[in-house]
Image (tube, rainbow, N blue to C red; front, side, top):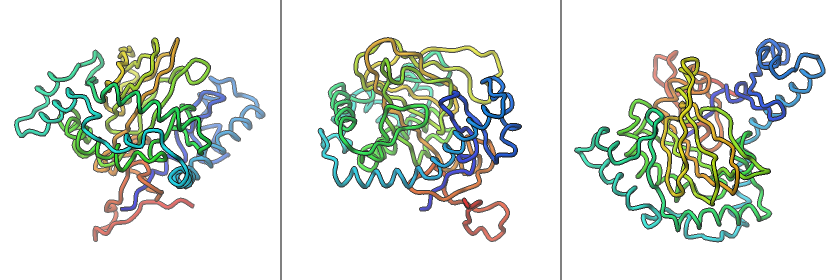
Length: 347
């Protein structure tokens, strides 16, 4: 099946670290007008300053156009030459999973399961519809972190999770997708999401983006307020030892202008925090130690084929390698014969 990204991936939400700004870029002529408020807030008012940030935006656009092919290239190199430290963890086994997690999954697969009762099996955080539960054994978490450190110390090419996380690993490039992340999503997380988030595509989560992030003093220490390119997200704490760095949640993305307040959630090693992707959240600064987290953005093509979660419009599809951003082919509303077509092509 051909997969896609929405055209907005190359024009919106373009992060420029130097200015800590997310910008829009359609063309040079309208750039200043489209980003007037943000540029002014960052003190970019002179022609020279605007030219500097415009140069950085163009670089980010070019990076995004090349990133899927670059990721595929890195994946080939890693598959051919990397020697894992713990090869046994690349395949999902129930012995790696916490007994409490397996109990929840087993209940969710029964015909009598319902949302009210499954919530009683989870820890409900103070933030709305945010839940936590044990996922992995602590022994598995130790091995997983050791594998990440082993890979990081190697000479392998490394793709980072996104422009906001500079220390982390894209797990598809390392070879975790087929044998580990996909069955974890399909057979264990999807049944839970079906009961908790059916209105957000839970139960129909058919692709994902999975990565590990690392926080440490003098490296990445925190993460700004944002939402995920996902219908449902799980954020699993792997270790090591750390202080602070709590997740904090606000409102849903479409409610950000209403009574802004924040609720903190504490990371517990081997536990996951489950939430809707469009729920605004961030990470407070780490004050000591190192924190590794496995994050899985789970996507439902049945939801995003109708409305792109990043631009809030019918997606304009651009074909790409891999799963892209979780869009699949779908009948165009402008065609009466129902043939599958793509809505847009990248020039």
